[in-house]
Amino acid sequence: MKSTARDILKDRNRLPGNAVAALADGKLVDLHTPIEMPTDIAPLMSDDARVLPLVRHSTAHVMADAVQRLFPGTKVTVGPATDHGFFYDFDRKDGKFTDDDLARIEGVMRDIVKEDRPFTRVVVSRAEARAKLAAMGETYKLEILDAIPEGEDISLYQHGEWVDLCEGPHVPSTKWLQGVKLTGVGGVYWRNKEGNPYLQRIYGMAYPTQKALDAQLKQLEEAKARDHRKLGKELQLFMFHEWAPASPFFLPRGAFVYNALIGYMRALYARYGYSEVITPQVFDKALWERSGHWENYRDNMFIAFGSDALEPKSAKNAAQLSEVFTADHEALEKRLGEASERVGFNYVCGCKAMNCPSHCLMFGADRKSYRDLPLRLADFGRLHRYERSGVTHGLSRVRTFSQDDAHIFCTLEQMGEEIKGFFELLYEVYGALGMTDVKIRLATRPETGYIGTLESWAAAEKCLADAVTESGRTYEISVGEGAF
Image (cartoon, rainbow, N blue to C red; front, side):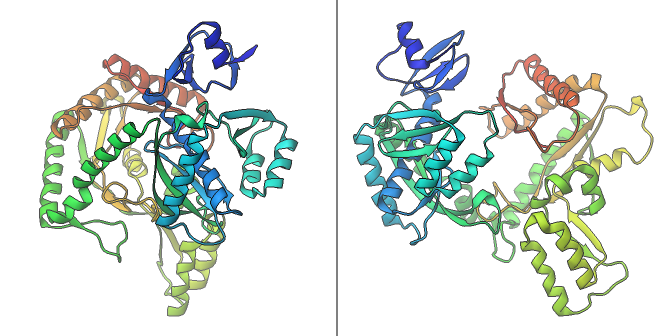
């Protein structure tokens, strides 16, 4: 039998006036969604950091409401909470959002908050949802509706007159959204796919109270003064140039620090039993097909071309090769073949996005004995990834970087001890750099797009979890965020 968290807490005399959500058997739920009767349930108050995802998601709804009040005809797409706030993507046909628009939107949002509109949830049939969304002209929501698997609940959330296709959860009413600040506008393709409609993304911050928001804004101002991009320029450590987008140039001072860090790590390699190797930058496409990257990671790789025997047919045709790099990636395989034929190249390869496959080639180059294990291979090799321009950020998200990367080849029985040994190395490095508040997340198998068997994934996840626990540390689970 299902009851709402509000009703269950009332029955148990555990519903204080400032409760905005509940923790039911460890899961965050809102107060107005029917749930299976939990073994344990506790209210969460407005000042509890665990309710921030609800506050931010609910604020995204209020922002979308305000946008559509001010700019009729604007269509909504997705609007999730993030680790630092929220965003909502809009298809607006009558212009671009300006700073003045953000101020107006924020003002309407505050009016909606004052109205104390309750968030209500209703489960509807697929046909009912389709009819309602079609009447509203929300074509993107219809596409999202089509992607909901058969058998899953289809729920609509509403505050005031504004309705959204949404899974939830949400705060009880808009009055719990006092601290609101819109921070900027960006752009993104629908479903992050070039060729789809280009949307405008409005970013924001949200807290239950204005006091909490002000404290965060002050912290951000202090962080801005210590921003590594600002300091890197002032201290002449590194630079960027438009002809090498998102690819850092390390100036003499920066190169000194860079090499000092490499020297420090090399000393640790010797102490912890790692052997340093050097691997190529470019590999035949066959390796990436074998490793699974060509199927699962190609959109984020730089593709390269060469010729063993042929010359480009003409400069004009060679220039046409650039078409490949803006192609729809679903048709990329076909375009690669056509471009190679047209231009006269007979060799397709990929720039190295990660070291795993090349280390596997080294390991498999000759026969190994169990006496050779564990074998720890470390690599400072430079990697290249085609990060979209909208996500690059200083040195934190770049298109070329050197990664202190290693792979350990060992027996199943050796895995636990090897992971524990890695933790000792990790915490020594973090401690030397002054990073003491270290959180561990265990990323589990994604639902789709993974390689390997379910049994191997389960064994690996258990081994990782046991190693963390046995080393005296705790971890959080990031469901489905494991790499393929």
